[in-house]
Image (cartoon, rainbow, N blue to C red; front, side, top):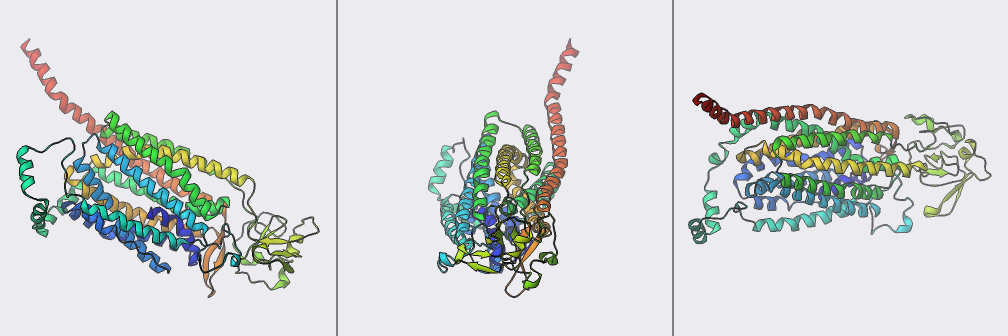
Amino acid sequence: MSGAYMNSMYTQIEKQFNIPASLVGIINGSFEIGNLLLIAFVSYFGAKLHRPRIIALECEKEPGSLLWIFVMVGNIVRGMGETPIMPLGISYLEDFAKAENSPFYLGCLHTATIIGPFLGLLLASFCAELFVDIGSVGADEITITATDARWVGAWWLGILICALLNLLVGIPFWFLPKSLVKEGETNDPEEASEKSVAPLQENDKNETKQTMYEIAKDFIPFLKALFHNPVYMLFICITVLQFSAFDGMISFMPKYLEQQFGKSASDAIFLIGVYNLPVLCVGYFSGGLFMKKFKINVYQAANIAFWVSLLEYLLYFAAFWTVCDTTPVAGLTVSYQGIEQVSYAENTLLAGCNMDCDCPLKTWDPVCGNNGITYVSPCLAGCKSSRGTGRSVVFENCICVAASGFSSQNFSATLGQCDGHKNCNEMLHYFLILQLVCSFVFSLAAMPGYMVLIRSLKPEEKSFGVGIHGLAARVFAGIPSPIYFGALIDTTCLKWGTMTCGGEGACRIYDIVTYRWLYLGLPAVLRGVSYVPSTLVLLILKKKVKSEKQILNAPIEMQDKEQEAVK
């Protein structure tokens, strides 16, 4: 829930502190940095200690702050707090569950991890609709709407709510035992009587007597064993490539919907949650149930994951056709005569109609002319007068509106950007439906794929192996992916905002065509490359299955030969 909320609010933080998307990517990656600081240590040493209590202790840290540097530090601590949940939680589950039930339980676990983000997105949608200074600024003082590029939602409110919830959910973990009876097994009467005499606290005392050397002595051998496991190492390569694609897309999807389809941050976040997360929930659950019912082996699971994922990858390319026409902005996407153009130069904001107005070029205060063209400011629209107050202000006698060839007696403009073209809402629905189908298909492959990772590890390697897998995903994907996605998105900016001190602020409008090709194209390339190691995993597992069959059939063949010799 906290993670989905933060991911959804990065565009608000970008506008709140007037920072570029690349810096937002660094703040996003700071969560992974915090996770990275502890993941190897926790996943190895934590497996030998009391796993539920370690999960309880880290989960309680979730500070919220005001300045962006503190937001980043808070995100680092949040990453540290979430470190033990996956490696220790999954290994705890695996250790005490029946082998045939494990995929189903993992499916339930992943299903639960979809409910949290869904709630996080709903919370983010609600908070993004509220103005950042709620309580200190009256509604009549706000002259911009939620669809305005300068709108900043109350991003800080949800952080406080998530912090409180994180504190509360950590408490029950303190009361789970260090170990459980393996599912389907019962203790012998002698063992039961011994355990009734010796309390659990005595066991804990004996475990704490282990020296650090005894705990750490197998660290290097475990690490070597993992590095010499080809299926495991190839799976890490697949994860890094796939996670890089998805993390970059998810981080900037609210911004993409805002810029591409003209939606407010609140609407964008709500639509992402409604169209993606429920079907992911169904897919995870169905995938785990399918594997439990048919008792799928590792090679079969790898095949299912490969072909289902490939199907979703091919469907993904249809997103390139969900195109919304560029919003006409005078001097940026169209000329003052209404002729289409794309420009990054400030001097194109000036034209004969506003040359003598001495307009500031760095200001972003858009108005919508009644000719359907957006102007960067009332001054650059050549407006001579205004009437009304607050959001109802109307600028009149706008020379540049008249210069566009618009046939009317009234050349006026209103606050805010003009609405997008009529096809935008239609294309948005196509895009969201495609996302829904792709999310469902991909989620069906998630559990089989994850079981390939789990079953490629020996029982004693599981916790450490899952931890190193998470470490690699964070170092090579979670941290750099949002940064280079953000940097590439920054290159498509047409108009930067300005800070009060005069420095460059957050981007106000993008070249949405280039933005679309970068946003959709980079994940396509990354995911396409991931199918190379995926194919190698299939070949290795196929060879392994074949050799195992030969070993099993060898005694039967020997017996047949002996019978033939006797005859």
